[in-house]
Image (cartoon, rainbow, N blue to C red; front, top):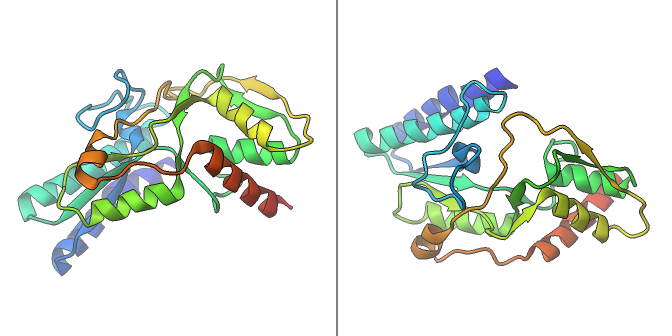
Length: 227
């Protein structure tokens, strides 16, 4: 949905900023680690400007979020609007949609159905998965803080996609699923790991839920949904 994605990040954000200005409200913008694109530094710090292909297939989302941040900072700077910007890294947990296209819902649903697990590329690309309750806690703390610049929220416990698939397989008993490899999509980020130094220092926040614990809860949710 490329056009709709760009409109939400631009026109939608503009409308919300105008409304917040009119009402004298504080506005929190949910940005994303995708503003870093396929990063050339690792882990990613908030000062990094990113490596984004603006005309690639993923560019519509990346650039929508980058514009969203720019517009938000402009309203903060020129209108004195109270704004907060959270850069959300990979997040997971119960209530994810089964067919939302992301790795974990795909892995869990395929494993539970005893289907082969689809991994794009060779699976060496990394992600850092943060459990949803940890993310919500961080967002709440940022909203109530006095910090207006972007803050990374995510779990720095980095893991390869291939190892992620294997951890999911290991959680589901009595299955014969195996990993199958497909071509890596264009501009897919090869590394993703947040530097959460700012979140620790400014918000006294860091993740509490381990991946093993979070995966177990999420797996139980998908079993229930798919039954």
